[in-house]
Length: 338
Image 1 (cartoon, rainbow, N blue to C red):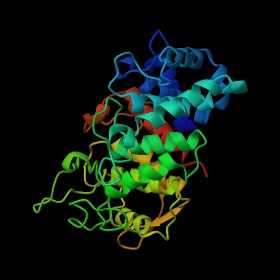
Image 2 (cartoon, rainbow, N blue to C red; image 1 turned 180 degrees about the vertical axis):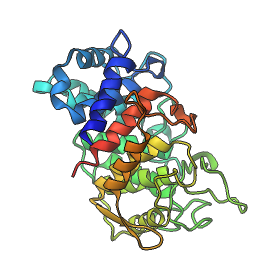
Image 3 (cartoon, helix red, strand yellow; image 1 turned 60 degrees about the vertical axis):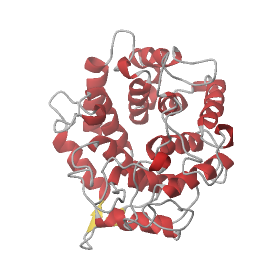
């Protein structure tokens, strides 16, 4: 596993990084932040490496007066800032970013859809976060928000996280337990979809009867978010999510989405199971899987000759970008450490 990580890191440092220190700056600061976080998770001492210093300086150039960390004119302020949080926490030598991180925490909380946007808890959008341009909230961005706030010290019972849990619960194909949307009982598989807001939407499409299809990457994002919000496996929502996860265990595809978003899925899969303190997972046939071993095997088989990873089958959601996908793979590998 160390050799896999070393080769991925060398790709980023020698072939992925631009002259100004950034990685794929057309995406704003997000990919740079993900690459820095990925490298520092495997090599904490690399914070003093000249290449990492240049990358961090690029992130710093995106610090904004409102506390966010995002490119000028960005439509992805929540996503960029949450990605920066993980990188800055790992680069926070002697507290140099304490103030920036606290400002980012307040900024992220301010993006949450709640009373400030004129919503009440009855609204399906309530508690969620979108990309940050006041686009509708979605589970992916809400999961980033919850994770960033937990990293920044907010507890599971924090008001913002509990509001977010209301949104997360409404993205699950499970009736009751706070899910009062029109789609709550349409699919009944315990999985999660993209958003219940604005009438609801799933990237996996709809069933013949109008239900919103569950898919794995959002189910792991939902499961992880519920764990961060203090729920346990005794909670029916978590139990239902685990049922979907077991019934659809696969690393060949992103179940429900085929090969779309595959490396986002690998990262979320690993992060979620680690958060849930699950080491062995039984699949639909009752076969036990040491998921870390399965994931390392897949990442070993898919690493390119130059040390990078890329989704050759499907470039949707930027997975043709070797910097982004290599960061996803390195982050996933970090959760494979026992």
